[in-house]
View 1 (cartoon, one colour):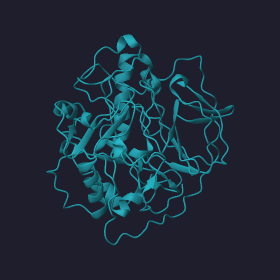
View 2 (spheres, helix red, strand yellow):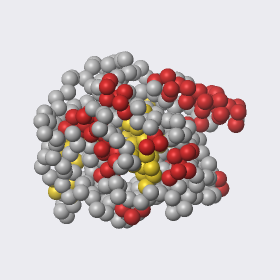
View 3 (cartoon, rainbow, N blue to C red):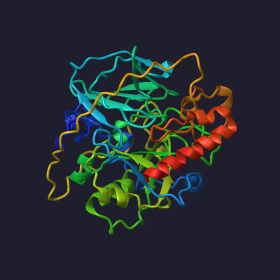
View 4 (cartoon, rainbow, N blue to C red):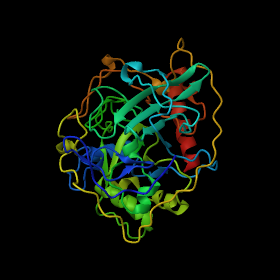
Length: 414
C-alpha cells in the first residue's frame, strides 16, 4: 500500500460536481467520492432518532466500549484493519467467481499476487485504480487452484455518488462502499477526519435506511438498528483528557459520526490496515464508552434514494491543524503470497456467514426503513479467521454456541 500526503486542492469533475480535496492515499488524482457524499455529511445538529435508546440497548452500549479494529497484530505483514491497495490501469484484471453473482458487479477485478487480503473470516480486498479512479471491493475473497472466488463484489466510480441497485449487497452487508468509512493514519496525523467511520454491531434489523441498499438482519425487530443507521458521539462528552490523535477522531465522531455497515462484534470500528497506529491511541479509543453515543435521524440529508449525495455537504476542506508535517510512511513489510486453497464446493449448503433469507421471512421493518426481498448474508460475522461455522450445523443450539464463541474470540483481542 502506498500512502502520500493529503492534497489541498479542490478537484472538479464534469458538470461542476464538487469533489473531495482528500485523495485516495497513493492516488492523488482520485477523491474518496465527491465532496457532497453522505459519508462527509455533518450530523452534529440532526435530531436524535426516536429509537436511539432501543438501538443502544440492543448492542449492549451500557457495558461496551469502542473497539478500534486496526493496528499491529504482531505480524508486520498482516496488521489489523482492511488493507487498501493502489494499482495502475495496466495491472492485470482477472475474472472472479461470486457466490452472490446476482448482486455482484461481474468485473474483471485487478487482483493478483500483490493484492493484500484482510485477515480473519471476512477477507475483504479494497483496490483502487489510480489512473481511472475506480474502486474495486470484494468480500470472502480466495485465490484457488482454478482462479479467484469471492462471496460478493462491487465496483465504484470514485468521482460519482451513484448507488448500488436497490436491494443489492456490496463487499459490505449494507451495500455501501468500504473505503470512505475507513479511518486512515494519514488523515489522523493531518488533524482532519472529515467523514463517518464504518462500524458493526452483532444483531441488526431485517431492514435498511438510506444510504444503505441491503440488509442482513437477525430478526424483524424495530428495536434492532437497521443497516445504514447513523450514530454520533454526544456533544457533551468531554474529550479534553485525550491525546491529540484521539481528539481528532472523537471530534469526527461528534460531527460525522459512525455508519452501521455490517454485522460483527458490537461497537467495532474499522481502519485501514497499518502497523503505524500508536498503541496509546488504540488504548485511549478503547476507553470511550459506547453509551456516550446516540442514534440520529439522517433522513433529512437524502437528496435522492438512488444517490449518496447529501444535503448541506461542506463546500471545501478544513485546514490541517497547525504544525502538521506531511505523513511519510515506512515501507510495508514483505508479504508472502498465501498458498492456493481448494475451490469451495458449490454442491453443499453455504456456511451460516452467507446464509440467505427468503422473501417470506422479510416481513416487518423499522419505521421509515426499506426492506430487501433479496437474499442476505452474514447474520453473524467471524473475527480472527478461526473456523467456526461447523458449530452452527446443529441448528438453533449450534447458532447460539457459535455466536458465543465469536464474542469470546473478539474479547481476546480487546
